[in-house]
Image (cartoon, rainbow, N blue to C red; front, side, top):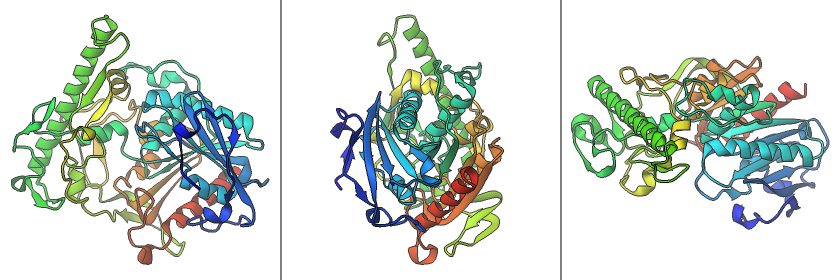
Length: 449
């Protein structure tokens, strides 16, 4: 089936697309018990500012009463549909939906996600429970969504916010699944900030003093480094100071906008040079694998044969490789003044840094995009899944430890990469099936048993 894109069905509303044969989506679906002679219906819909694809297995059992819903979060690319992960859950018998927002700002997307959930509940017969499913940056969005849905917008309107979010009322989900959540969109921005720019406004002039890719500072080549403690401390102080300068600039520009003296009447573009979370050049942990190398405590680790051990879980990630050219505009963080402030967080310039399993000096609690900070305010059943070959696997433990949910669980999948790939198929087996089967068992134990 050809991929569908948002632009292909913006004009369509509640249109039923071509049915999928279950056999086309069973790869990686593990112990699916679906009858492979049946089909999975693909239902397309458009709500205000979002498009929806719902996969309906056409069954009527305990699984089909649960709809798993995903929206990625702050994506600035056209979202490709269908969603393979959701197809796999439909093959297991669940209703599953991918919701594609029409613009790229977190603060707007929480409302788009609520619009999508409301449509699913009103139009997909038999849905009794909605469970949010996030991966990586998607966990930033879904965790913020559920925190607001359970506690109201006031949860992000206190004195600790640099810009309180607008009033909104969201429909709460019944559960939330985090798959290899990232550190938080703004935390990743902070950890990616260039520390040696001559000017914060240009990447083209840099000094050597705090260059993490310079051999004299500990860089060994091909993305591998070993930094001494003195360099790390100076580097982290510089990142924290620059972040706080950016916050100060954003606040001043917002005040001018409010006074009618800004670039526009409502908002302004805000560009962070060398500070986008997907650029690893200035992430010390991407090069020096002493950092984020293991869990803090003993956790469940799921192995190839389906067995589970409880242990301190090691990261299987190696250094990410040569970052290459990172001077192009595409590697900047391009947002707006208001969005930067909505996502703003408190950073202690003397404490910011990280070790083998923790991050210090960041105010997670008032951080809109932090899954573990948001978990401190979410009571819905919560499952955190870490992927041991992923770049941010340790966050799953953070979420679990911070979660206030009476029903919560944590598991690590041995050998799975951040994007759901396999570090070594022969050694680690079908990691996607292992993960899906565990999620399936958790869903049934939590909502149907």
